[in-house]
Length: 216
Image 1 (tube, rainbow, N blue to C red):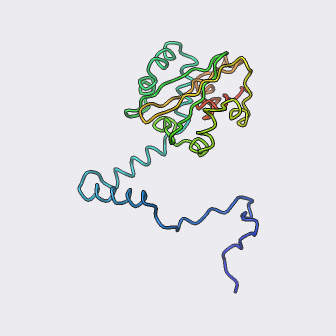
Image 2 (cartoon, rainbow, N blue to C red):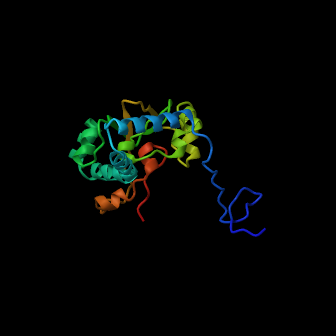
């Protein structure tokens, strides 16, 4: 019988070449049920409202690596701000107008002889209040377990091959403390303003698994 739905490929790929997304009609997990129950209870008791919950979701969705990139670009161009960032990254972020809440943020600087990389070995602690949601690979067991044991090998898989004389430091985030990498400023950027510099800063460079883009 003819129908309007596209036929499914035996390869598991859609006509566009991308894998089909699994339907989300599976039973709710225990934690999903608990989240719904807690949310509905808080609304019922007047502790919060659906509008307030949605506003918080919208605020989180609006956060992105662009916020961290602006922070990095300011540090590259303003030595006094860089000093404040290295002393207290939380206050430096607030100084630029980013509401990061109670987040304890620590900045670590890449130099000619030291490269920093960030991980959360227990779960997925990440400076979400500044950079938004972490990439999926950051939360994976493979990354969390391997980067602390063989960081150079993991970085090489990201396309980052470091010289042997560069020390690699791995920083383990916690529920109380998050890290952001201050990458080294690319050469040939002396004439660029903050906005142009921020465009060079990648999310991965602030995690330590990549470098800023090179200027065109």
